[in-house]
Length: 311
Image 1 (cartoon, one colour):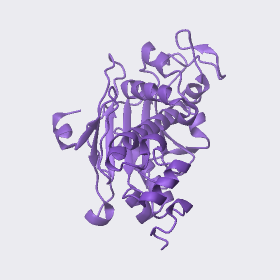
Image 2 (tube, rainbow, N blue to C red; image 1 turned 120 degrees about the horizontal axis):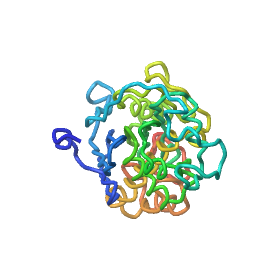
Image 3 (tube, one colour; image 1 turned 90 degrees about the horizontal axis):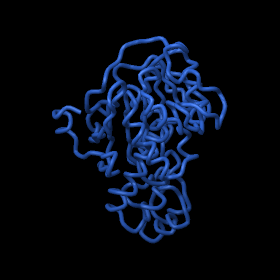
Image 4 (tube, rainbow, N blue to C red; image 1 turned 45 degrees about the vertical axis):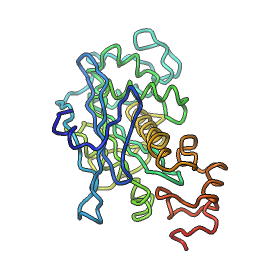
């Protein structure tokens, strides 16, 4: 990332240390991968975006220059992973046992070189941001190391925390482009959960430059204002690009909640439940009251008699 872009960032997320910092506003993060060259771990710069109410425009101005690419049609002869069969648990990618090779087979079957996937994390949480991520994979340019490392791509919910953290680093290292957008609980309360969800997915895809030839979204149609895309039902269990985005979104959000958010709001247990409703979380809200990052537009018995947007 250029020095001019890094200087604008309020904080950074280091893929090796796992440290992430961000304020409670809108945020955007971008990183360029190392497709076609010796991969190096990419750092992700995080900076506050723009509040549409306060500054009169859509949130999330991109911070950074993303590695560019051209256009290329994918064929079985040109793609180093095109021979992977569509079945679970087969042997592929240089002899490694691939847990979900059908995810790559799906994306390869689209017949193009550059495929992006988008997914979100934190939709059902009682506190904290919703995070959207977009990941572009170069299905031709991936080296053998990258193909082997990415063979374990799956829906983030099906992975252990340790495996998800490891894949996060692998994705940022080997993806052609990665973009992350976060919207705060304040944004969710103001605009509604669904509208905010659609916005972070749309903005994550919009950050990608150049725009990949095919963009896939897990489950949602993002509207005519979004980059051209296809909604894929159960996309994080179907497409490698969407699965990668699912992992990036989940891991980014978890690191935010377990690190700076838990430190800023002690007593709520964010380092354990990352904002989801649990018995411990509910009791903490009853005892301490909602924090500044709780979603007051959600109806929850955890709020008890504490004021919410419903009175």
